[in-house]
Image 1 (cartoon, rainbow, N blue to C red):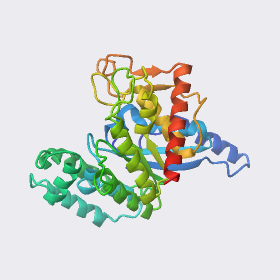
Image 2: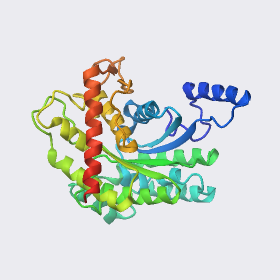
Image 3: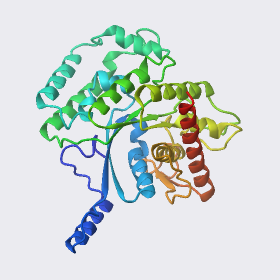
Image 4: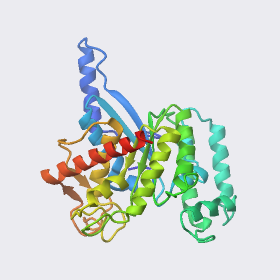
Length: 353
């Protein structure tokens, strides 16, 4: 899938959506009008935790099973291994949030700024760069600015493509993904830059969804107790702080859901052994958690029951298994229930602040 599936020529039509269009056209041609499906346009900003398993498509699938009358249209801006600090500060991903109103002059100005960034191996504001990384436990000088040059080049290309063909998309929702960037300090890292991007999204008429991933708690073997519960608790606390600060439409708290499942022990695993990314089980949990957090309804009993890995080698997933996992009814219902319970627990915690 392209870097932003609906920017530019929008050349990835959804067959189901096309069929619906024909059906609705035929009905309206017969004298019945006003039956067109409601559309919801969603922009994801993130990294491979959004891209793997085509997570936005999984979210679209579960959302539309729960609400068949609504056409959810998912788009994404992805930079592998990157976080909201770099998305907002060096890749200007806010351009894509603002695309309905931003001028070509502003886009060209941001392209020029990014080209200037490529002229140095040092961040333009060294102290801001170091403060961010030290808030996440790194030592001063440990993370090199030159390592993101390739992503800056990719961001320039994305901006140039937008200049050539800007669909002026107005987003209904913007999803801001965390990834190893949640600091205990609520004024640093994910909390700081998600707030910045959320304010931009709201100013442009979009609601905000916080997608909090949990790479630090994903177990690669059965556990008898929660794995890294302190990081889960930190992430939940920051999520609650952001509820007060930016009033998001939803917080997708994967750390809380995984911690709850691990409590008392579980044979379920949430990452690959040979790859640190979320596996199909975690992707399924996450998509159901999106539904529960976003709608305030339970996905329990939905027919949706399969996830396919989109990074394969010789037709196999990173652990050598079938890329597609079809969950049996017991596992499916359990993960749906745990997603619902985690969403409800987070809502109660946030409401009780």
